[in-house]
Length: 462
Image (tube, rainbow, N blue to C red; front, side):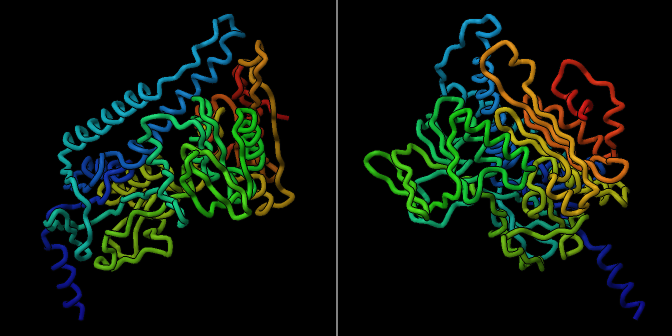
């Protein structure tokens, strides 16, 4: 019996594969994984049917941040007179911005291609599907690998209702040649509030329709209140408990109807921001011995391993934390473990910081106050600070900032750090490091403040 087992193992080790690793998907996570594997000496093949960089580079983080910067310039312009400058011009040329933004994205696509080429990573333009656990097929040709990683990401969901195709998703937003003037956005998460803020700042009339009681429902209550207040102050209407039932085209534009009988009329554009689905339908997972879950995601364990030991999954396709840096970190750590000799290397999915690019920005890492109280009860202590940043001291326009520390136990270990205000997107990174290292309130208290800044409020709370 032992000899037969040894024979099977020996046969497997002696099998010849075309590659050490095949990566299905050329998004941020898949490419980071592929490049790190190649650096460790693996022979790597990547399949990607669209532009390199996936959602983040092409229709996500990168072009979104460009648009956020454009909207931020509008907000900065409102401060100019209080500092002695003439008011900024109010006219905005959408086509100029789109042309420059798209050119920037194409440059990034080219950079990805050059980086892959420099590491001798082969890239095939095509969508691969499984033939068996070690074989994939694309463009009529088959390829084998000792290990295969699924990193196909996701795509925006469309609602199942009459006339849904009259609207667009976030992908369609980046295709707009002209800015719509009257817009409804269905959704309550990152995409809804970010795109809503951009469009309003650039001159549109924006209404956000939420299914429940407001935006960013998974965030700390303080942040939710601050974002809601900022949206209202900017003139964005948030309609709660507004569940769309149909979208119609009329002579006056689009009309969006909701379950409770409301009708939002004369719309130029409706954006569906109702979540994302996994891009797995055409992978033929069954041929590899895999099965997607009820939502189409490929389950993976803490080591990114699927139910088939030599097949892995990472990034948005797993249904885990859907953030670009998470996919990148998971991909690099996986390659370090498989080819770099780092046996314990994997991503810790706890205490991952994230920022929502509202105006001003919203940042969070760790537990919300509600989560901490549910787990730790009376051992929780909360510190907060609310203020107007100094940059608004000279003018009539004021924008609020707020911070919260969620602490637990006698040593007041910080388990949650939340910030809303100018610079939140930049300051949170360092505080996230402190939280992951187990910092306590005393550690923050003993840190000398940088004055005058908004960030100093984190180390001066009482």
